[in-house]
Length: 116
Figure 1: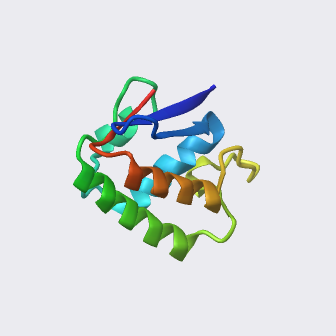
Figure 2: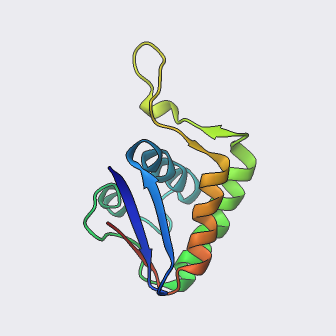
C-alpha cells in the first residue's frame, strides 16, 4: 500500500509507501506551519482521495519551504518523534533524498497535484 501522487502536468508522478508518506506530510507541516496548507488539507492528503494543491505558484512556494526545512533539519533519514512508540521505536521514516524527490515533483507538477 502506498500513496500515488499525480501532477497536473502529464507524466509527473511521485510515490511513497505508507511508512514513508506520513513523515513527508509531517515534514510539509513543519515547513509550512499552516500558511499554504491547512490542517484539514494535510489530513486529507493522508488518504487516497485526491486531496492536494491546485495552483502552480503554491506548489513552487511549498517546494521552496520544504527544501529549506529539509536541508536545515534532516541529515540522512527523517523519522518524526510524533510517530514514536512507547518503546522508542518508530516505523515511519523516509530518506532525505526521498523528501528532496518530492520537492522536485512539486516544481514539475504544474497546476497542482492529487494524492491517490
